[in-house]
Image (cartoon, rainbow, N blue to C red):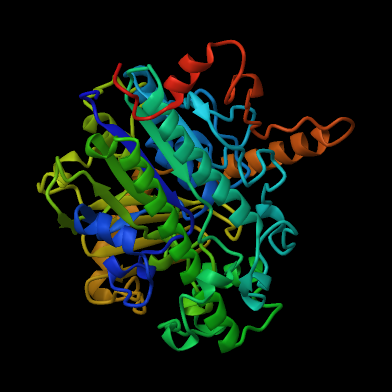
Length: 504
């Protein structure tokens, strides 16, 4: 077995920490996540850097904020010239493998991964480009409240089809790696789309819960009680067009909890395959999400917000041979993952560009950390950049379009008291505003976002005229090299395919 550790990164999409027992939810059944958490290092204040599918992933891969790489929204191209942890680890001798969702937009569908086992569930083109100049026009391709009003059990969905394929291929790849003569360690990312809406799940998972078990949102606010950005989110997801009943809210949350249990079962299957392939003792497992889900809190759904259920995510590092079980209270975020992975495997690369994150290795070992996070939201539902800074107990949210928000999360974890206008916090607000002005040129960033949106809309319209050439990843599966073929002796072929091998 290789001395360098293997890395298995298990990703869920739109998984809020409040839906896990390890973060205080007594209802959700996720025993495999619970087991990883009990033997691992659990981060209690971990954030995505942008609460939207694609830019969150691009920050995770690159260690940089969306504004640094032009990855503004779900149709922004992730430039092929941006180094990712897959590039750095591959350069350090790792096999880099991706199975599942990563929402790469543009013709580069690998970004340093040597192998990609599935296509993506979402399109790779520019068709989902938002238009801040026409905010009143709701995009037809975005969420509606049908995901909530039509929640319930089902037999199959796009998401079940996709995640079943993702996990099947990932498990098969583990067995292929175990039988392979290639001695390199691996870094495998297994990225599921559950528990992302729509809130539907097969009957067996629906039946793991009863209506009476399902907790309801704790913060109920009317539209007139919301901040301006939250009111815009109501518009963009169509909440102002459809009323939602308590029964529908409960059904949506029940289906969501069922989807969390589905994700947990897939994590259990991956752990079993890891053990069966005899990799378990030398593999670091990391469990994380792309972003959270508001799940009806404040009357809002999905993400796109810097309120805690939307932007805070689970992050668990399971490496019991290296780190004692622990809870980390210091805030950290996805931009910290790239330097952490490099430190974990001793890669020590020369980073081609300055990173926005720091290695979490000291925190994993029990030392203190920086306890701060920077976030940006530049996608649909906004009309100007939205900046978030979390430091210590305070969260500050600033946008040129809106009044500031300041929350003391130690005293007010549900973020009900905006302290930005209180005289006692005037100096703190001023310091945060000065920090934002020093770290971001929001006028230039706003112009860059509008310019990018304009260019992508032109390109997308042109590429749809005449013959359309998609960028979506097409996995190659060469049938001539599968199972029993006549290019090798049968006994040799069967012996190589058997694991563990029979001693000569």
